[in-house]
Length: 139
Image (cartoon, rainbow, N blue to C red; front, side, top):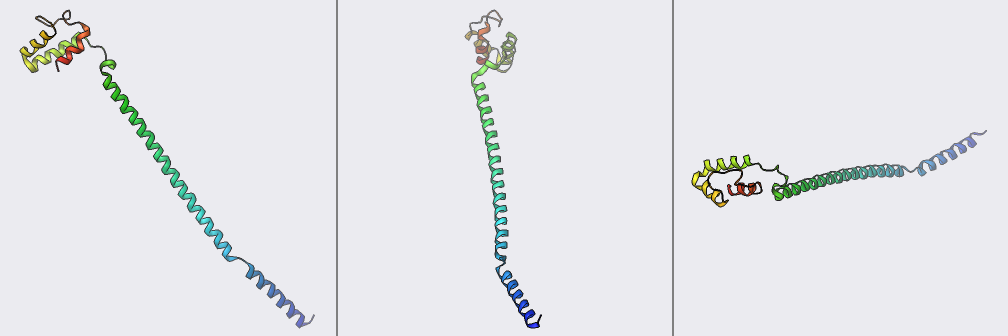
């Protein structure tokens, strides 16, 4: 083989390699890396938004439960004594004694008169159905 032929083969190989290197797409690799980074950033943003939405949903549920609890308590307060244990005669006597201590015997006599009680407060003179009304009158 002659040297000229060998030189021609080397030049042809060099041309092929040069064309191959020129056809190699470095920008495509960089674009692919940039696309991957953008996708990772988008995924992270979506995770943050989902976490924020979950937090807001959780807070909304807590607020709804608290509102329901407040409404239940308000309803219980408005229903009055329905949830309280039944009043006893002793409850009225205790409250009446406290009323006397704070307001004196004259005011206490007025309350007894209002309820048609003559003399001393007794269980016979104050029917159980009027215990709550009597206690309200002492306030």
